[in-house]
Image (cartoon, rainbow, N blue to C red; front, side, top):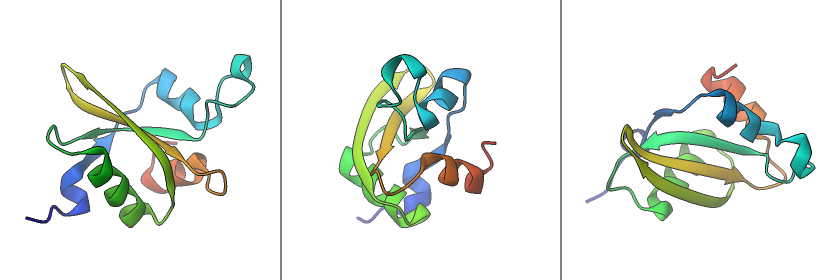
Length: 95
């Protein structure tokens, strides 16, 4: 069974902390930046999340980390260096 990308990525998760993910924090010399956080389907795998994100936003993903929270499954998506998380955030209306 194939899951469509819109069914995997439910919506972006936006807080002050996740906005810092876009550029990174000064204390970390911006090394922890270029990331976005999304609420995803609870049964979605990291590979499915990566493929869905790359398909929807036409970027390349370096790494996906996930964790379960009481409001659902969260995915922190780190983009490759040649792509900017801020550009994706602008397209989806985070700013």
